[in-house]
Length: 140
Image (cartoon, rainbow, N blue to C red):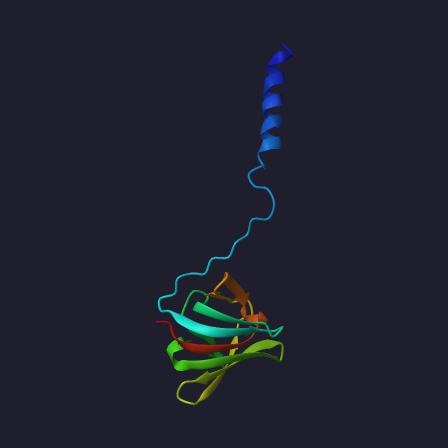
């Protein structure tokens, strides 16, 4: 009679011990999404590290989204020459130099991911960690 409950208990213990053994260690990787258009840029982070990136995108898109007052704007990369990010009143501001010579200042979300591909790795960086982006040209 005691053997009837013995085997289910053993099977339950074996299952609980082996259930969490699917991966060992930290196996994270970064993959840059494929944007709809290809741009190259120089990205400078808040520690002044500079990288040349291809396939740069903002949250997988080729435009910058932000707020101007109460309006929501999205500015296409083809209209942007450079973007300078800075903290103002506890919010991330983006000073965007346009190709027509004008400048627009937007409030942007700090945790939006930017992606790109360098000559040695795929790159992901949050907006709050970027100092400046110089859009070079649409990639050929």
